[in-house]
Image (cartoon, rainbow, N blue to C red; front, side, top):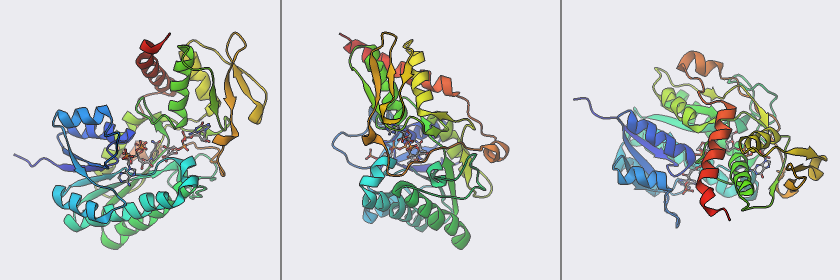
Length: 343
Ligand code: NAP
Ligand code: GDD
């Protein structure tokens, strides 16, 4: 009987870690998750996988080399999916050191230790469309990188130093997925999409008065996380390691996202004013959306629109869930989980 492949996922408690663990389990892998001890513990969907004996935990922190060394020796993975990161762009301006420690040096620790225990290991690195920064759309694998935040600078340096260079220097099977924004009902509530769906569901249910946002003009290429983890797996199954843009090829403003979420709740919004004075009103003229410049970034990425042609041609990957389906899925999930609290 063929040996089961072993995968180690760092960032297991995050959005992507959870969907990827489910996918790899279904594909017959032994799945291990690198878990950082937090007082809140792992989210329920991860704990459920663990309790069902589908997922094993190894404790570790990518900022602590000894824990990564022990984890790699214990698991000896065939495939490593390095998803661990300080993943919030706005926060990266507040905590640049932590961001570099995790998103740059942490990648080095994971890649070096993975390679040390298994020279044939295949490593997936969670690179990002933020690395394109101010590069005009559409962005593809051939576009220049131009990062504008500590988050994106650290991610780009890790991509160049530990993925591209290790492929060339050591022949390591190391590959970056340059993923554009992807969302789901499991998205953290401090990212704009989930902040919108969660808050609008609460407003609809009479549990919140108003939603404060930052830049409504920013454009993002938003897809569904469940589709994007399939691309991660495909990237590691190719004959040759390479980097791929994963995107929908469609972009929307933050305001478009609010409109779509509000429409899904049958709560149309009328917009008035501009910039920091823009407001969104409900059908009774009540202001339910406002702008708070606190959420502006010192440097903004204005327009992301990915060109997923290479992924379609070489991986056979395309997104399955449309923008409207994604927004509706997120709104419905938040509304259903909150409705028992309605007054
Ligand atoms: P997420 O939900 O924020 O999850 C981040 C994960 O990293 C969490 O499991 C977190 O664990 C873990 N982590 C943070 N610091 C760590 C450390 N020092 N040691 C070990 N684990 C640590 O992020 P996501 O949306 O799933 O994204 C996954 C990866 O893809 C990230 O690297 C992100 O930068 C990248 N990416 C995401 C997108 C997107 O749109 N979602 C797009 C492009 C690239 P705790 O629970 O312990 O905090
Ligand atoms: N978070 C947040 N909160 N963003 C807001 C808000 C708000 O209240 N109001 C407007 N925005 C705008 C941001 O300025 C940004 O232009 C856009 O909404 C998206 O912000 P986020 O949802 O925080 O995501 P991101 O694009 O900065 O980063 C995400 O995607 C990257 C891939 O492009 C993260 O998942 C990164 O880890 C990932 O690499």
